[in-house]
Image (cartoon, rainbow, N blue to C red; front, side):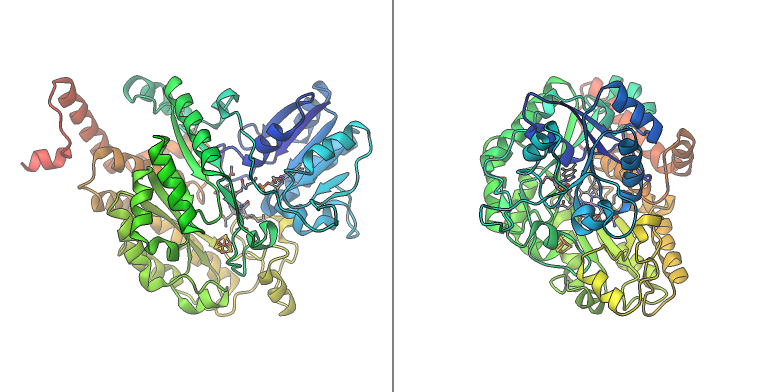
Length: 518
Ligand code: B12
Ligand code: SF4
């Protein structure tokens, strides 16, 4: 049978990282079947184009995965595919949280023939076998012989053949810049961010988060060897193709078991399997100096930290008191001393937020080493304790916000400011964080660092700005370059200076402005 796995586009950003579920399920599909993958972020298609593709390739089963925010689009696609007579199975966090919606059991239209609830590693081969026989069940739940929910152990873990897959559609470098970089920057014309999971689960149970409910509070890990082998294969592939691979360890809390994380990082170092990596780690776990040393030695470059708020009352409200705003600065400095920077994530519209929250947060951020702040409005995802609390309190203004998805729009009334004020705060936080002035200041703050680090920092700022301000066109990129021309000229000037010096045989690790000063 021919199978298509489809991930709808998120409508905000393009193809910066493959979605792991597609590659994982492809790997877990029995080899007699042929699997096609379409990620709408890399290959945008409307309903007609997708159905034409399905008919042309004679696809017999379509699997669609979706987060809550893309589910309306996922349903539209599913409706068109089913109308063409091809069965659809849906999986992922949203359908797991509200399966009745996809199956039309809530009074609405039916969108899927079957839903795969929870982790589908073990149910997927069964789904495929049933589809081949034309006997799809409506619901697939991973259970053991006694009917008790079962979580895959992750040992063994399938080997995803990244090196054999065509990943060119996920090249993060804008097409415009590739020829220039190919000529002058070894390997940087092709940069791929590859998702790797080393474990699943987080027991912390923050009120707004779906992870504890979805993956359960039992944490499971792959073996160190399986992760190290995957890294070694990726490293070899990058070398062979003269390209850059950056790894995103997508574990929800990469250091949730510090002892295990240290042992994994030691094994990565011992095997020489280092690739630049990014991971999500909560601030409380970054107190450990030895852990941070190992992060550095294993080439960890950026850590995503869910700070959420600088207000302890807000943190207590959402069951995240293990975050201590008073230590944020120390944590970020501990990382920055080792050239590791943070993606700091904040939620706006929490119950104790009042007008001015953006300014207060920006002021704190300005006192920290430069990082990449991201801001989102509080979002009540279905099946979370937050959703239930707001529903009970009659505070959900758009109880099915996902069916009328609008980026950065509140779905509930905050307690101490209006929805309009919350949107204004969010807008201010993004606008100021990525203004050309802030970008220049961020570079200034790390002026003593090697140019490679500063260029990377600046490039990341340009990309991260695009999370809020759409940067999908050449025009948008050109405007961005123009607005930030001072910073760009400085970096390019220094880079060219270093390059010329290197060609003349003068090796310099001193930033050009230091040379000028000397
Ligand atoms: C990586 C990641 C991202 C990446 C996404 C890009 C990418 N290419 O992967 C980035 C960092 C950009 C991101 C951003 C966001 N994310 Co995110 N992200 C994750 C994360 C950490 C890992 C996803 C993953 O790959 N997991 C591993 C795979 C194997 O698990 P899985 O996807 O669930 O797939 C399994 C099953 O669900 C099932 N399955 C999935 N799809 C399908 C389809 C079929 C047909 C079948 C049969 C089975 C199936 O089988 C798989 C194997 O068991 C998850 C948390 C988590 N641990 O999953 C959050 C998560 C998915 N993100 C979440 C959220 C909320 C967001 C943001 C909205 C946050 C924000 N406020 O901005 C943004 C939105 C981004 C956007 N523009 O769309 C929520 C989603 C909740 C929900 N109900 O939708 C999650 C669950 C985290 C959370 N805190 O609750 N995210
Ligand atoms: S620490 Fe992160 S992954 Fe864990 S429950 Fe809280 S928000 Fe979710």
